[in-house]
Image (cartoon, rainbow, N blue to C red; front, side, top):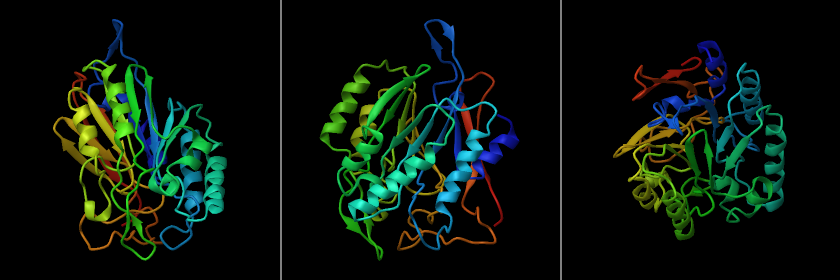
Length: 307
């Protein structure tokens, strides 16, 4: 993918993730064979069904991102949505309508494999039951070209509602059953296996007062610590953010609706308002480069639009 193609995708709020840029993937070999490069696309926090000033064209924004992905001359191996597919709705009938609308929109992706995991707006009101009807298991793992992917469900057990006129969820938890599953899943992998964790909430305490944490995320990180090459990709905070817990790198994805303020920079976590003069303010794109030796990588973030 060249710079122009990358820009076309990320201007719509997406991130293209190249496996060669992830920790531990650069020198990967499988059964004595040279590693096989691939890339995938992560989209997050689409909030289909939202109506308000923060983004007057939420569904259109998602369709723009989809058109950019479909136009890529070399399609990604897969796409993953890391939660908050829909905007919150208390009424089950409205929640079902929004999930059906989201599923109808993303059915037009031309990439064969599209994966989903829930955020609190998708699964917090019924423990993930309706999400499972539409998209299957709320947590799972899969292997792709030598990389082990783990999709965690940090949205089905959201905790208490706090803050704001509408209220939003406090820090969630993975829960003992999911942590036990994660322990068993990891036990079958070598400590050298490259692991990518996909989740909605940050696993570390980024801003607990805003619900930007996972109450038992430290237990998940402890289970991951013995593995030498771990990268965590998450959403929820609607902005670029990078964090290290030991050797584990955590990278937040930008939203397809609107950005949030810098963690802890103000009392309330209110979304930043849509600016018609700079409609892509807060969105951006990321370039991931591996060094010539394939032993390290760097992330370069570029702003998009005006302002």
